[in-house]
Image (cartoon, rainbow, N blue to C red; front, side):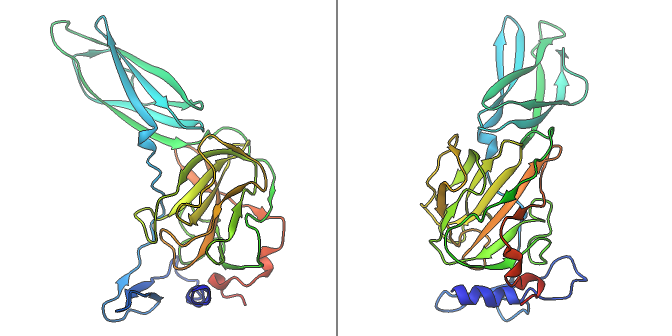
Amino acid sequence: MFARLLFICGLLMASASVMAMTIYTSTDANGVVSYSDRPTKGSKVFEFRDRMDEHLERQVYVIITKKNGVESVYVRNNLYAPVEIELSFAGMKNVSGAPVGTIRRVLPVRSSIRLAQLTATQGSRPLAYIPKLKFSLGDPSGTTAAYRYPLPWRGGPFRLSQGPNGQYSHFGPKDRYAMDIAMPEGTPIIAARGGVVVKTENSQTGRGSNPAGNFVRVLHDDGTMGVYLHLKKGSVRVREGQRVSVGSALALSGNTGNSTGPHLHFVVQRNTGMGLVSIPYRFNQPVGSLPNFALGKQ
């Protein structure tokens, strides 16, 4: 399997004149999944999705309380990270006190904030309105601190199978500067930087519904976040809200989500204004000297 991953990564040496390569996937009678840059009978286009299903709507949400004819609209952040939010109102009828335009705030860790107090213009009639909430992990203010990341695994050496701006999947805003390190399943994954665990996923088997597979997201003190993806099911050893240090055991590497073979996908992100983006980072060891098959270097 590990050798097959390196062969697959070799397929990514196509012309740099295109932003992304089309990869086709097929499954044989024995259930073996294969990938190629050429379509075959029964193959399908492998769809890369630049997203993670972190289900934040369960932890960032609107609360409305009613007392003495006043409806107070709060937003609650149950996460162990600040959240930037935008709240607006649509479909308003018989409403007084609604803010003009969109409200934008940064909610601290595990906090609530009242953003509006609404009353009926005509007291004999009910209020009607629809609160619309958008949010993004992290605080866009502040400055990213200079930091060189220790290798987030034990063992090796392993090969860089896809680097920054890789044509296969590292071209979207959330993953542009990510690195994929091909390694056997079960390799110990450790924290490359201290911080607080914000989100984890630990229950996916194989190619689950979340493109990221199982993962750990760690918030660093400067507001950036390190994300460790495609982890082995059941191997995550940390909990949300836990503080970790450099070298703390996080999980074991796996092959879950949108993964063409066992590897660790490591990316550093920050909120730059209602959206997470991948930012450049460097390891403190010369990983770049290993072959990067995604860029055709051997």
